[in-house]
Amino acid sequence: DADVTQTPRNRITKTGKRIMLECSQTKGHDRMYWYRQDPGLGLRLIYYSFDVKDINKGEISDGYSVSRQAQAKFSLSLESAIPNQTALYFCATSENGDFSSYNEQFFGPGTRLTVL
Amino acid sequence: AQTVTQSQPEMSVQEAETVTLSCTYDTSENNYYLFWYKQPPSRQMILVIRQEAYKQQNATENRFSVNFQKAAKSFSLKISDSQLGDTAMYFCAFMHPNTDKLIFGTGTRLQVFP
Image (tube, rainbow over all chains, first blue to last red):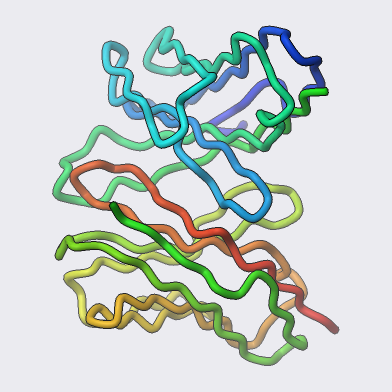
């Protein structure tokens, strides 16, 4: 079974709809991240959470919100979807290690979202 | 702010040949990490190799190696004996250890031809 799972894998929605992307992990990691991938732009950080009570904005948080329901679950919401939010969305996790050392990020399989 | 630049949107190589993908970055930090990720058509993000900035020795993982030039802020990936399965998008990424946040380049699409 995959350590980091994302649901749904693919989603088509309409402008103005509220949509939630879910991420679950069985790695026991405290840190979780949401990234967005657009063609020609690479991956950009939307939100990140270092533990259940810690939520931080990333580079491109406008139009998005998140919820850390438990250590293992981190959800990304689009309150009112718009076409330029069409993208591939990745969740990632990492250990709650010492900041002076490297903590590898493990990525989920991605969710392809299309907003019509 | 840190930035990562990949100036080659697309590259191609024949099977069994060697190819080098370029990456430059900008930072004022002295301690950081650099990575190459592979994204095949399955779209899964796969860590290929990483380099700690405090290490002078270039990292190597089987057919994958890097040329890390700290002063020039350059971090290229060399793939030797290219295989059809190496066909993918490759992303260069930077991480400052105090943030744990990855900053990605725009990617290089590599096609390996038989």
